[in-house]
Image (cartoon, rainbow over all chains, first blue to last red; front, side):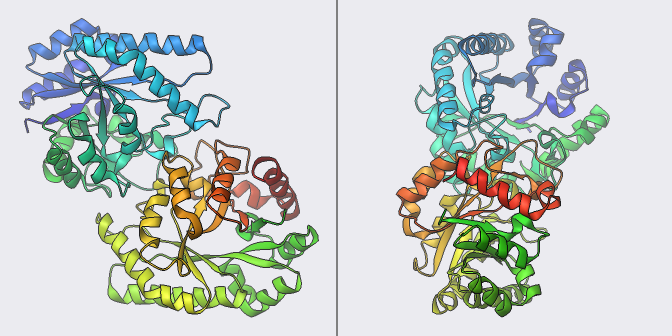
Length: 271
Length: 271
């Protein structure tokens, strides 16, 4: 279980101290953190809490959202991303997860939006590299292309990442977003040392009204999670495997129950 | 407007005779038909109705659904596809649209499901070719991968189609399903004379509870519909452009109103 990491978003309403304590008690090595609850707790205080518990931060979610309608908005977003990089450095994690952002309001210019993502990465990559943080581009499922993330496949993420040094920009392999892609195993092989994290949840239909919250527990859906994990391993990835599930039913359940369930499902379907 | 074709599914509750009469009155050349209402009306009777109105059938929807849990189910599906090919031939259309089918119940074997699609095509392609019908593989949006269609990109559709003669197996370019793909323009170029139809609607968020009914009218969403049409043209496609919208609000509106609206939006955003 030395690769297992629970992203705290999976137990969204559970206090940071509780999920840290549970991870420590379960003798895990990793935990995945989310910016907002960490900011609320205090970034340096959170860094100390995690270190004192003997844990390392597998990733910080999330920066990005580079697409903008004007220069002021663009600069504000870059500033926020620099803060996210600083936070990641303070937390001692190498991985800042980036979601690209969707089409700017009223726009249909997908190529233009993707150029904005590339330009944002170009501004931030050296800043991140100097702080020992990698910008990890996360392709989201194509159903989020218009409103959240114009990078919709691992190939698309790599096309962006490969324009920068591997120690500055990498990619996330999130099973939920990528599993359907007939090209995904070839792209994982291509990704090689660009892989910053392998994230797991499961694809369950029907989707809920809020499609952001449609992720299922590993084993409840259609994804070959172990096969994808083995493909990441074969590509040279040896880092943590993060469980990241956005699901209202899980959020409403007691934190320790979800913690135990996620760990058991990981053993059964991923490890 | 000589390439415009309204797929009758756009005005689902409008009788076939009415949509044929409206298409004829608007001096269109094409109409897209759906198996169930055509069967209900009578296939030969429908063929005569359409021909007498001076129209040609741009495509018949839909065969496919090749994935099966056992041999009996597989054979039943192949039999139904042979009937669909016969119906297409009777209607005088070259294009039978195929939706592949999702994962078989309880399965996570995506490669296996895609092999079932290939095997189904192999059984049917000569039968179709002898009757002057092309099997047109339609990639559906990846959000339908598990339950409706394991072919999720134009590249994936072409990987299948290219295993067969071009006069027997082609592909559908449906903007709704493919627009998000960073590789789509390259794949359209690759498709060339495999393109059997260009279908249009628009991507609108949020998705409705039934994600099958999320399509918007051209111009209401995020898709560069004209650019995609021009890419199909540049790849050598000269055939009909089909409007195919599944949308409960449109279905509930008067047929002639939807007919007029779709035509106007096509002029504005596609032609």
